[in-house]
Length: 524
Image (cartoon, rainbow, N blue to C red; front, side, top):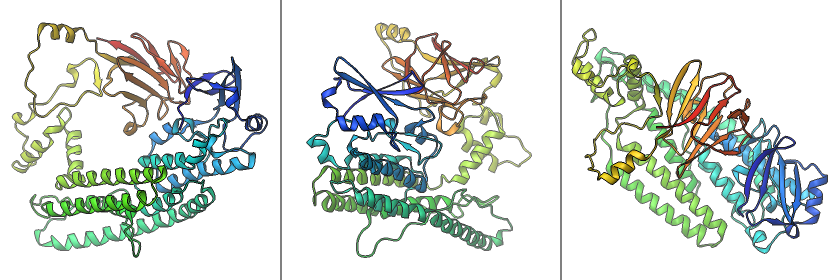
């Protein structure tokens, strides 16, 4: 995709501005498409206006009531049904272009140029009426293939069989929109049936597992406690007859990993060695060899058969996805005793004993095995405790404490002066008389009300799920309102959604109005 510049403004409502660094000249535009976009309201396309200055053209797109797709995807992981629905919306938008004498190549297929309404299928694309060139025509559905592959990174649990059916249509040079839409409609209809079948199988498996464990440990006189997963356990799809299904192999790996986590048991008053199994190193190397063979077959029968850009992207996407899954399975198998049940016990222990560091949970658990329930642990175990009242200012998002201390580095006098002169930038949150120090430990620091998807969860009224973003790059800091419902104020001025504002030390940002929490950029 050609690189374009993007900006946002508040003229006659919220608008997105698109141009090019070298400029978009009037001679590059298609007069028929430009006339059609100005006089017709085309479904699935953002309403567009343009103005010309010194033969250079700038396009403006109205965004009222729309939200950037990129930030929508960052809030919640996608299910396969939502993934199919999202692709169907994009395919419908591209398919609708031909009814208005527009080309699918004119749509900007990138997450930052795509906007959605209240529903995920309510897609709005930005269209640029630039004349078609030979390179643009030859690309075909390459941009659509890239977009579909990038969407897979937001899926919670990938269905390899369905993903293969979708990618199968995008190996040619034309736009297979009709075939793709038909396949997506079939997959959306099958998704609820698969989910219902998976839930039924999960329930039956839990009942059988509970009966087997109860019978196995009946002689101990203790009732085992079983930790079941909250989500349904997906069953690995069956391989296709007569051929090796790469996507099904990926799905099988994911299903096996989730199944191993769900089958882990936690027993009360039982020895730690009962029910444990040693990791099978041989199985890992067999899995690695199988991965290598499948990747080699992918490049041999997909890319080398037709050395095109589409087949290259498809082979690269499948290879990266399989390597990521293999690393995940390898790391999961490296510590089989670290089950979800044990992590739940450690979390409960930390909640009951405030102030204790995360790394001391195992030490405390070992001490409990040697002491009675009524006996308090020795003071030596809790040398790492801290007094919350000792610090007047709450500090969050701090860097993690390393378990193994690095040796001290002797600095020269010049290095010491340079180190002392380098300022530390942080945010101070003030609300209802309470102040909190927020350390900017990541390059893209997000503030919102969903704890697992943001770097700081703000519980004040009026805060959106993803409200504000602080971007740090090369010593500069920029703030961006992520399309929040109640808006943000920078030094008393309303921030335009999605527009980046350069910050200076002392700048004050209010979320959800002047009465909302205030964030001040500070240096120390």
